[in-house]
Image (tube, rainbow, N blue to C red; front, side):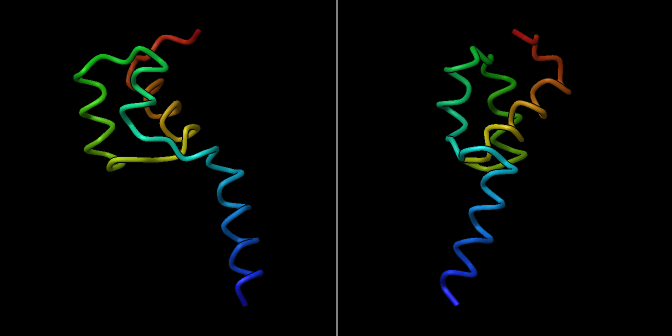
Length: 64
């Protein structure tokens, strides 16, 4: 049973990207304090990096 669950978690992780803290994400992508707070409100203390990028870009984060 554990192997099935680990496989499912692995697939989810692959779709979402690696999980990162919002603070780490904000530093890496130079996100301002207001957007960092909005992301924390939306996702909590950590989320998949892909989800965070998509959410930040929808809110006007410039693409590099």
